[in-house]
Length: 77
Image 1 (tube, rainbow, N blue to C red):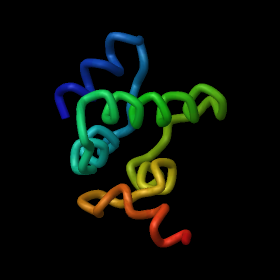
Image 2: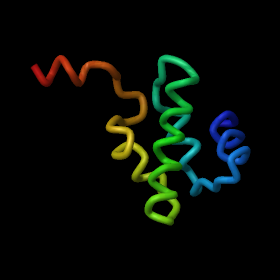
Image 3: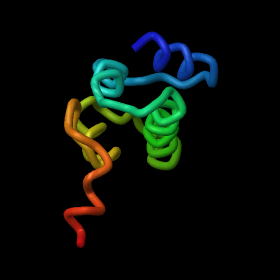
Image 4: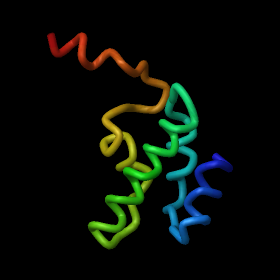
């Protein structure tokens, strides 16, 4: 959670309450993936000129916190 808050603050961005918590609960393979998830949230905020709320994060990332990742392609086939 501290990584998310620090990275957002370094870029001069604000995050809605709960967003860092939701991002921190998602399972990532590495810090680069976490940074990518944060960038996606920040991009939506910039394009839509509004704060993304915690309830929207899972939909933006296409995953739920603590859900297994990397299996979406297998279910597609």
